[in-house]
Image 1 (tube, rainbow, N blue to C red):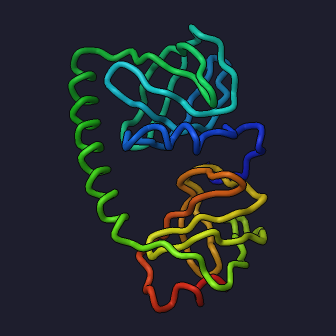
Image 2 (spheres, helix red, strand yellow):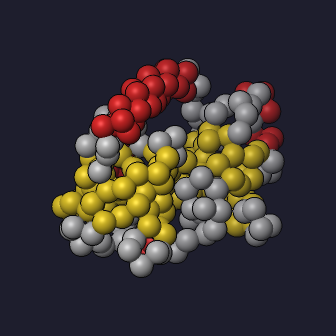
Length: 203
């Protein structure tokens, strides 16, 4: 999951679809097709019966897949109807697995709500000097422009699109790519930063 993937492998309207989820959990994941190929995705609108996989890959309805969803683990599913930026899936769960899945999902929704309250306390602002650079795990460095930044993360305009979950360096700050935005990525910092030194960390 740490590689750079081409734009054709990623949903161009992920951010639009994700914004429409209205506080629904959006998680990272990947799915395996019958030919054993694996593909990254974001997972939204999750409930005990179904979910939406956000990806540019076209998969016909009825195909059986195996998904690996962060915080939820491995789950078998069948591809349902296509939607803009992805497709729906229907889960195949045994009675015992269904109960565990529901408990885990309820816990995640509660945790996500608490996290969002905490994140809203961190004021975002446009840095005076917006030019910076992203360093990938393999050492490659790409120029970028910081759209806005807070103590917990930043929105960055860049031509490189690392896979979701990839750890990168934004200037001197370590974080991971948590979602795609128009013309760039959103990065969540590994640790909360000191507001006095934010702009100095970009160089």
